[in-house]
Length: 171
Ligand SMILES: Nc1ncnc2c1ncn2[C@@H]1O[C@H](COP(=O)(O)OP(=O)(O)OP(=O)(O)O)[C@@H](O)[C@H]1O
Ligand SMILES: O=C(O)C1=C[C@@H](O)[C@@H](O)[C@H](O)C1
Ligand SMILES: [Mg+2]
Image (tube, rainbow, N blue to C red; front, top):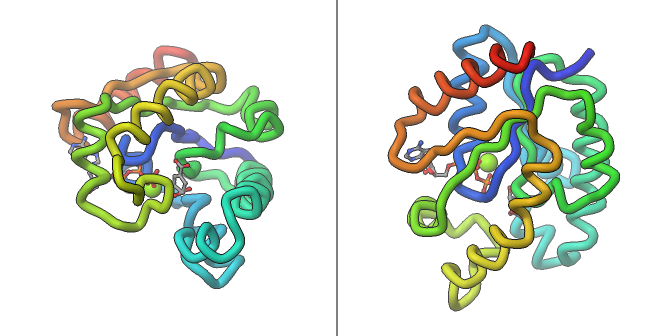
């Protein structure tokens, strides 16, 4: 059992939005590792960050990704920082991974609509987002075989590109 597609990308790139859309179109189940971690912990991602700190969340996330890759055969969205784990990057090898990219301005705009992202809750979300993108772009690209730009494109257009990209690489 293995996911038909795994979505990675920064916060606000649309992993959850596009993932749900793709699952609906393909007639398969959608799974999101952020939701898996929350269900296992019985707490929100924000609460885990606040009460236990980021390293504890990352360890829970690593286990959630490993379980989902082994158990889920639908569309899988990973948390935005899941690729920070070398173990997770190694586990993603051989899976059809799509990197949903978003530019700094649009990423800040989209995530600014919500307070549910503990890493971006500080005084300067734009600077934090820039640092995060710089550190992670090589990691998203390392694990993904397809990269899709999401700026100025509707969720439906992004979903079209994901499916076209996957068929183009034999997935
Ligand atoms: N292509 C798009 N065009 C416009 N808005 C979008 C697009 N994709 C997602 N959004 C909006 O951006 C916000 C963030 O999207 P979403 O929650 O799907 O991102 P995410 O990648 O799952 O983020 P996180 O890593 O925090 O879970 C939502 O309000 C969503 O409606
Ligand atoms: O980009 C990140 O590091 C995160 C993204 C979200 O999906 C959550 O996993 C959490 O808020 C951390
Ligand atoms: Mg999400």
